[in-house]
Image 1 (tube, rainbow over the protein chains, first blue to last red):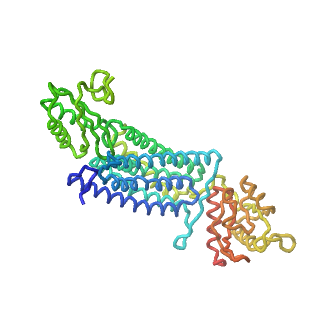
Image 2: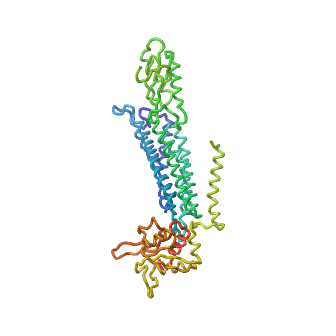
Length: 330
Length: 166
């Protein structure tokens, strides 16, 4: 089966990247399953461990959203879904982001209350190999061990996210990469209890809660702006996507085109392009439009869904001068 | 914006701090420690034990002195810490409140793992499992002050390593 994003067939090398990303996400889910089990068993009464565990549980959402979305966007556009299923990615992104925000807020309040009430977390012992060991040592060991895989996976995923232009994968990778901070925070919190600082645990939990909330907010903003059809941005939302410029440039280079400008929105992996062109002289034949469209499609695999619209003047949002909107001429 | 080198240095510093902890433990800093110093106060001094009567775990012996399995255990633990035991009797909820205020060091009274006090007291690990008349399993615990982890750890170490109970 050829991997597709709706109507867009992936170039062969990108198909390999996609398969690799799917494999990495399955590995992530496997690693997470081991992590949540280990952290749960060592959790005890530490608030920081509880926060770290909840963060790990939430980390399941992005890889699952990614895997589901990859299946969903495979479907070609239909009568009922004329733009295809690309937005499934954005919806998954938003759901995961809202979950992060909610949990971050809950933990922030929960840990803050613990701190205000002066709760002293009791951490006792475990029997291991016939020895009585302080549970805190086990907690710190578990956090140290479980902090390593996400950092490695995160680094791999960032590269794949860039090639696939997948923002869910990028958000996931970004969170994974920052996971070591949670681990160090938890270790310091538990160590704090160890030396008799009862507040260290709740303080560490607060720090983790704040980082979850920050992740949630960042992702929610990204997901919402994408669903609001902001102009297409690079995979990390740093700058406008260079393809917009390339499309306009290509259209302007055509001999019959006087001016060109386009609205480009990000559907998830692929772009939806509405290109406005002002013809030079009389109306060109239909073939010219078809050729112009095919030229745009050849620019990048992400560009498949292109409409080229002839207009007397460019609308303002596509770089025009006068108050001409794309929806309606005033 | 931090440069890559600065970030790496920060990471290494944190790593060093984490690795240093066991070392600190090695040179005199006791881990776990009590925020309120319960174990230090008890060792070589007095163990203030709350007792709520629940035969055969805790009962009034001949002459009014406390007796019962858990009373024996508390005496043995106190002896290991070179401490004498000062008994305070009362109802469970009253004793737990005193424990929360730091007026008691531990509470016994045939408490089990699923006692409702787990939010107010640090229950030890179950040291013994019995079956009651209704055929339910009961896991027996003692109650220590919240967050006094050195004391809790010593008490659990004592309870879990009792040869007689195994």
